[in-house]
Amino acid sequence: QKEVEQNSGPLSVPEGAIASLNCTYSDRGSQSFFWYRQYSGKSPELIMSIYSNGDKEDGRFTAQLNKASQYVSLLIRDSQPSDSATYLCAVRRGKTSYDKVIFGPGTSLSVIP
Amino acid sequence: GAVVSQHPSRVICKSGTSVKIECRSLDFQATTMFWYRQFPKQSLMLMATSNEGSKATYEQGVEKDKFLINHASLTLSTLTVTSAHPEDSSFYICSARDFLTDTQYFGPGTRLTVL
Image 1 (cartoon, helix red, strand yellow):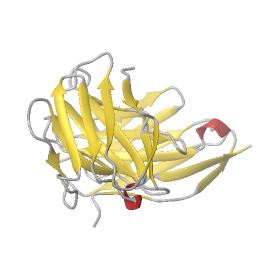
Image 2: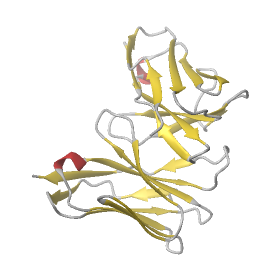
Image 3: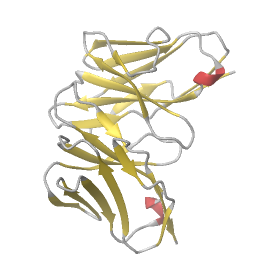
Image 4: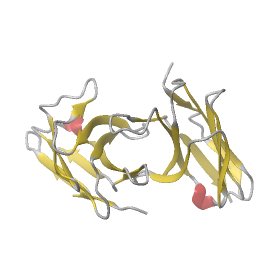
């Protein structure tokens, strides 16, 4: 089992719809969770971080964490064509410098105008 | 947000030469920096973790003698690809962790092409 799993996609949604991106992880000791967006040919940029169970909202983005189910998701409301990118889920066990961030394979999102 | 710079952004070199890539954290001190490699349509692969003032920790399968990492200061880490070969052609991305914000920021990446 891979440490961080995501559906590779592509996930296609119409403009204005809600895009739902899912991620599962295998290490129950994981404490920190991140969503990154990566445009083609560019490096990843951080969208959100979440550390506690529940929802965290930032603008059109909502991250949801359920540690019991080892599941983290990202919702994008009012999707725009500019949201078309690969979304990377990342998980870290702790906060020390020895704790690596493990990235999932990414989900490709396409927002259709 | 914090900024991480990388230089050069793109490099083309002949097989057998060495290439040095610099990664700088511009407005924060990064005790830990990470080097990733990404092949087309694949995910990020962590190559090594670099801690300021100490030897880098390499991931399994990454040759430490081929990919030399130096983290001499709190704002600068370098990756040198020695005796580069065409199979080393890839997108190399560095990342720096800001401990104050507990956030990992990525540099813009360096696209290496070895002819």
